[in-house]
Length: 87
Image 1 (cartoon, rainbow, N blue to C red):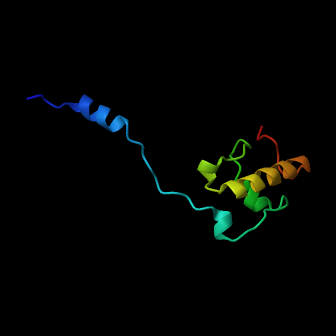
Image 2 (image 1 turned 60 degrees about the vertical axis):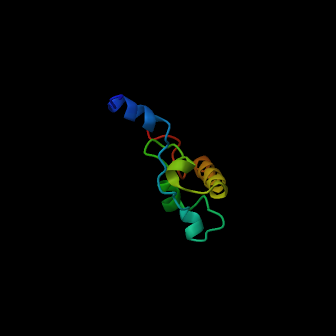
Image 3 (image 1 turned 135 degrees about the vertical axis):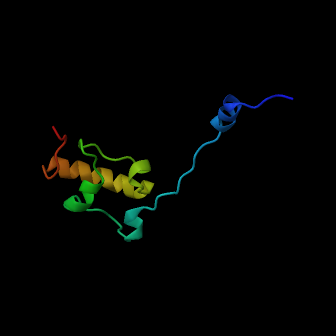
């Protein structure tokens, strides 16, 4: 009879993917149709510390709202309401 060791167990678990709890879009939950570029409190939550726009998998926004967020952040940067970088 073959002995099982930790290596066999690791190989077995290697093919499995972890699935976490799916994030709910906070803009859909608040029933916001469009996001305004002047709403800096909401936009600052969707930007990382270094000034990058957070991706959908991190922010939890749906695809439709992520497009609105991206254009709103870019417009706010263009009008100098938000910085391009944190440097």
